[in-house]
Length: 425
Image (cartoon, rainbow, N blue to C red; front, side, top):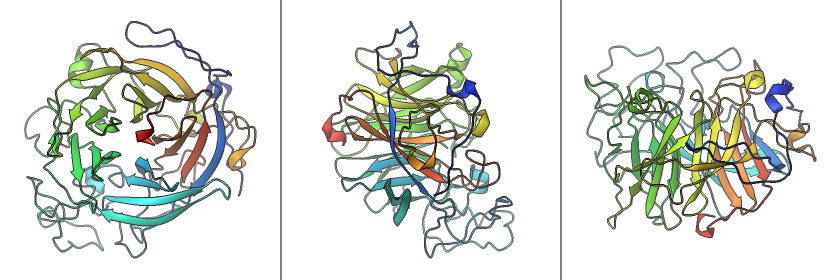
């Protein structure tokens, strides 16, 4: 494997330390950064140009780039925006809406894949696509791309024709960004166009109508009409945690709401509650807790549960490559926090400065993870987490200014054991 080490300015690797300590927490939940003793255990990579075998061509509404011109020969296995670790060491990975927006992802089928990272060889294997998401029972109360949307389009790009109406869902319909598996084996997806909660069965078929967020709509919400959006595009449910007993979902927004910005709370992200009823459906309580980012320009990458009151959060800046500075994982605690209150934060890992004494992945020491979008963290055991990036195929900029970014998988050993509820492993 060729070295992928990236030289960064000293400012980008400013944090050092050895032992996890408790933070001093300010009134709004902002900590004094704690030292970290995390260490890279392993690394593997899935090549950027990995396509679903025998799949439809895609990218007709995009231009691609010099390295990978569009349209593409198939459906890319790319853009990992949510993940779930299986007991056998493989991972389910959720592809996002496709190529960045509703306007250019009409031919990107929403799908769930299975991959198998191998940190011994350094290669991640694509194993299969479990399914593409669909709505055969017509639970979505508006027009979808493959059932009326394409036929109503004024024009189509060269080489593309409307598919047979089959109720499969595409990046024109939804932008899936987070994933959890229920105790009944069904799938919950946090989505950004609404933002919505989406509930699918084991074959990827929608089980209930999209669950709307109370008081929040993005500019891409299909029911917005003439109303004013309450949150920016691509700032919906980037994170989605599930309680250890599987009875409550905790969807977390990537950006602040218009109401919070107007109140001077532009650095606040909302963590909602959505209990799952005995009938298997979810509904919002309307309650939420607040997470205070270190900078209003930062964004959420992922949000998962550790136990019934502790969670992991990826908080990141918008830089990549040499401009990436802030990419961190925090331990969040909601214990004793009332509706509208602030959770506490403890720094676990600075992803721009992770000790790498064994040179995992051919990188130097320290290891840096300088991607624009880092959207996946998963528990492996009490002391180990897995982190993956969304490579925004076929974009470059993380490791190279010209070569498309790959889907990287990093195993990180934490300084101290987490209090993991083993129902979440």
